[in-house]
Amino acid sequence: MERAIIEGAAGGFRSIELNADDTVSAIDQTLLPFEFRIAVLRSSDDCLRAIKDMVVRGAPLIGAAAAFGLFLAAKEAPAELWDRYLRERAAALLATRPTAVNLERALSSVLAAALAADSRARAEVLARAEALRIAEEDADRCRMIGLHGLELIKKVFELEGRRVNVLTHCNAGALACVDFGTATAPIYAAQAAGIPVHVWVDETRPRNQGASLTAWELGRRGVAHTLICDNTGGHLMQHGMVDLVITGADRVAASGDAANKIGTYLKALAARDNGVPFYVALPSSSFDWSITDGIAEIPIEERSPEEVRYVEGLHHGERTRVLICPEATDAANYGFDVTPARLIDGLVTERGICAAEAAAIAALFPEGAT
Image 1 (cartoon, rainbow, N blue to C red):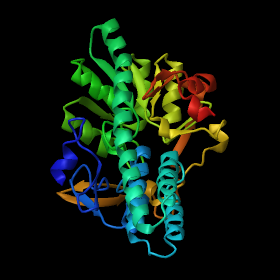
Image 2: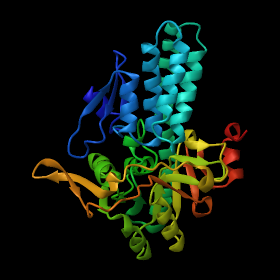
Image 3: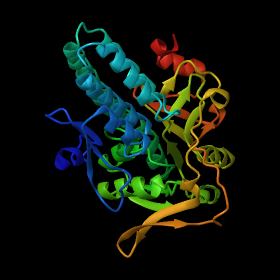
Image 4: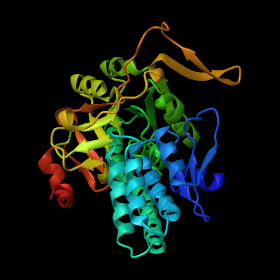
C-alpha cells in the first residue's frame, strides 16, 4: 500500500487511498518529515480522529477523508435506524475542523447519496461510490489548476529569461489534497515543462507545515526550494527576489475573500506594497457561495496554545518537544486569517484564472453562484 500511495498520478504520491478491503490508507502527516508511515483507517472514528489530530490536513484532503469516513459509517450502521446513525456520524465528522468548507461539502454529498437508498446495504454501496468520486474529482481539479497556473509561471520565465521564484505559505501541495496540490500544482507543471523554478518555503508557525511538509514534498520531486522564516517574505519582495506568490485556501467567499493559514494576509500586504502578483489556487469545492464577507463570516479555528508554546523537532535521532517561552506564559493560536479580495490578483481554479471579484467568480461558476 505504501507504493500505491507514494506513486500518485502526479509522479509523487497520493495522500489517501481506499483499499481493496475497504479500509482507508493515508500518509500520517504528523510524523513527516522524519518518518514516513501509513495510517490505516478502519472505522468512521479512525477517520474522525485522523482529521481532528491532523494526521490528514489540508482542505481538499480532509474533505476526501471525511467522505471515506462516512462510507465507513455506512458499513458500521445497524440494519435498523441506519439513516439516523449516518446523520449522527456526519455531524461528528463535521465538528472536527470548522474553517475548511470542503469538509462540509463532501459530507453533505455522501450523506445525500446514502440517504437516497432504501436499505443499509444499498446506502453502503452508494456512499462508497460517492466518496471515490469526490477523491478522483479532487485529483483531477488539482491537475487542471496546475495547467492553468502554469501560464503564470511561463509568463514570468518568457519575460525574464531566468529561474522563476515563487513564494508559498503553509502546505498546499499534494499532501493537502488527494494529488497534485493546489499552490504546488503550477510549480510541478512548470517543472514538467522544463521551466526552471525555485520556491521560497515559509516555515509556517506554529505547526511548521512549510518546513515539515512542503519542503519534504518539493525535495522528493526535485524542485529547488529554500526554507525561510515566516517574516522573511517582505524582505525578499523588497529586493526583487520573489516573482509571484501562490497560496492555497481553506474557504473562499463568493466575493473572493480567502481564508488560509495564519500569516497569509501579511504576505498579501507585502506583495501589494512591492508590486508582486499574489494568487490563490483552489478547487471549486473550496468556494462558500453563502458567504459574501469573508472577514466577518468565515469561522476561524482556534487551536491549542500548546502548539505555540512548544516546538517539535529531531534531536540526536529522537523526536523532541521543547518549550520556547516561560512556563506561565499563555498563548493564542488562531489557525487561519482572511485575505481580502482587493489584495488578490487572481484565483487559479480548475476552470481557469479569474479576478477575485463576485462577478468574475460567478461567470466562471454560474451553477455555484445560483
